[in-house]
Image (tube, rainbow, N blue to C red):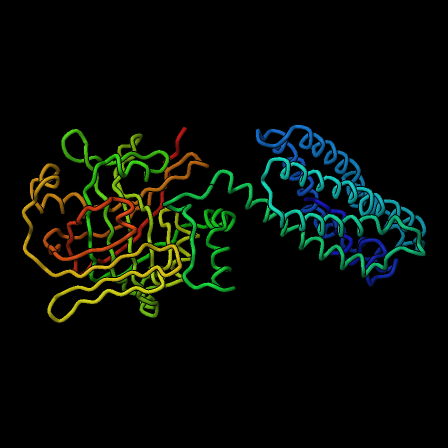
Length: 493
């Protein structure tokens, strides 16, 4: 919202609404003409943004025509009242101020200042506030709304309406300048909160919750006020949209004890997990099968590569990635798609959630991965009341297994299975609201001979919901030098 008429509260020299007297105001404008003009440019730009917003509302299919048309007319009216006055204040006003300073006669400048001030600070401001009421009508009518926005709209628009009308009141009951300034400051805070709340609702139209992937709701296992605050930030579409503008940062980790658990199931069972724009990598005769893998490991000082040796100061949390194997039919690039991921360190999880397109991160209540002296491996992910997947495993090293159906229908032997699921150095995710796929290119460089077969028990309600009563084929990798290199996009027409 423009409300550029509020500038008199932000710059001391504007109209008699600050600590400066008339002579000092005129002297400031006369002495700093280009600073004065420059100070108005952002507000003139916001007037243009108001027009663009009104046009966007009119062109948006899910916004009702009548309130959108009304918003456009009100916006044009406010701009036609405000902008000529601002232009006069930065041209004629400067010359009048310079003439007043040279002659010592302020009468003509003050008469001009009072007239332009009312045009900008009162009449145009009132029009902008009425326009804001039209915004509320547009979004409420479209259902892009909630009760909190009703209360926020009432508070913001009432306050801004009161301070805009203040200069028009008779002098005896006109609010003092300090009160108007304070009201405008609070009004702008409420306005920003309203814009963020509406943007969140609008973004949720194109980015609704899903049962898996990046839009699956996050629930932190820690409840109370802190947990609710984390949930609010992690589930915010607006926060993630801001994160999309930040350039990707290269990450590194010296990973240890990677536990792979691979489930071979009917491909149709995994098809509902596919995001927009991708297809399954199918296996076996007629493409009957597909693979789902969860791999859990201990990070080694996970953090940005640019930190160099300082990365040793960073923690080494436990992470679990749950993925299916996909292909982009347009480029024929293959990779993996994460249906869920979890990490045992809340700051890492929150940053990945907001900044990484490919990681639908969650936080378990407890996580443990230990290798006993006898070589057995104990693994446990406890989600608690949170949204992370559960996992419990007791495994031991074993010789390479002889594959039986359906494994033998898809792979010649255990080594062929490793050759398929291990060299997956690309994560692919979808952003249908931008009509593009996102590729995260990583480096693992795991030699197949480093993969040691495991046998034992693996239990997971999360896995059972996805694949049913299927036993996984497991193996272990002792060390992995993880490197995240780049993020790239494949546009769709």
